[in-house]
Length: 276
Ligand SMILES: [Zn+2]
Ligand SMILES: [Zn+2]
Image (cartoon, rainbow, N blue to C red):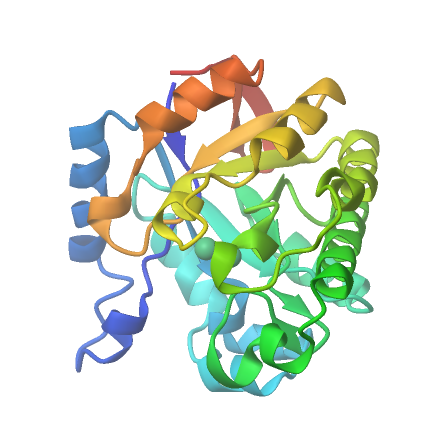
């Protein structure tokens, strides 16, 4: 079994089209065709929560206010008319756990990806006005806070999957890196992953980013595997050609980390299938 549970129908490019193309059967079919070509059997889309106006009940950051244009219920209804699994990529917003829980419980989702993009009001993966590295150049502080939030996200019980678990490394050598052994930062997150039983996402998106490495890094993946974690597999595609991106390499690396099963989701229930 190969899955792709983390990718987006709504893209930046799509925003500039005059007609609304994202949530149309024509758009979905492009992804279904691409998945079939690369042998990905199980496909689910996971739009960003902040694209929906309902997200503003959770957090009112200026970036979210600009993005929040779609209706979450219309999205859910649309995806249910297609063969796709219904997912959502949801930021962990500290302090908004109860509001996040009710927003998710009210919808009939197959799975929820939990993400940490923002540390405070700046993001680890964005350039420009929200770039955390412009505001706080101290890698020790950024990495420590990032992995603490990741641990809190795991323990919150809000999410089925922890998305791109070491996203903080995205820029590779283009941003300062901490001097310590990264395992120091991973430790609290791995403990939380083990205690919560949350699924850890293996994401090939890192291969397309300056870091040039799958999320999670081999050391983090091995620590999670040793702690008994389960894994899912995704590409974080933003165009059909990225579905199943780098999967040969991902499957090879996963086997080297001791992983031979991947998670599949149905109405927020996980089961395991043989990998590959
Ligand atoms: Zn993300
Ligand atoms: Zn994503």
